[in-house]
Image (cartoon, rainbow, N blue to C red; front, top):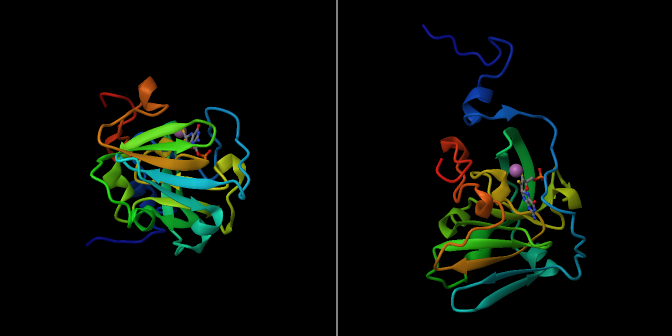
Length: 199
Ligand SMILES: Nc1nc2c(c(=O)[nH]1)N[C@H]1C(S)=C(S)[C@@H](COP(=O)(O)O)O[C@H]1N2
Ligand SMILES: [Mo]
């Protein structure tokens, strides 16, 4: 007979199954960035999705806040091996932002204020898998964690979740971003431990 009890060995079993290979659990929220924190005023903030035909879809800060908000609770996995469970965000689904965007592109190159870029397949931004988030834990997203707004794509390693996001370039051909061009993986699935090119 199986005894199923969460407290049986004094710690939740769920920790093990939620932790991808090679990762450890942390309670705090480390700050990682390849450069200085850009200061982006909300009055000047804009988010632009451009397509392979040159069409630009633009949202101001006011436009973003007027869209239906979602409150995802997700686990984060950084390639430097920390994971953080059950983080609370608020933002707009990329499914909502892409709803009226006509494109035949298969790839996305994400651009951030400050110059950071990262690439991923467009399909990974669809079906409620990704958000432009502007709140963390019920408060405005702080600049060090990507405020005013960042991309959140929790099913991939956290370097794909560009902080200070400013736009997404939809492309017919894939183009590597900042970390990908120095050897990090083009896809970055934590469950398959795709840390570096070739993994
Ligand atoms: N614009 C920008 N976004 C970025 C980065 C960066 O250097 N610049 N670093 C990435 C990496 S490697 C990680 S692990 C996460 C860290 O997010 P955090 O500082 O909120 O923990 O942001 C990602 N997004
Ligand atoms: Mo990272």
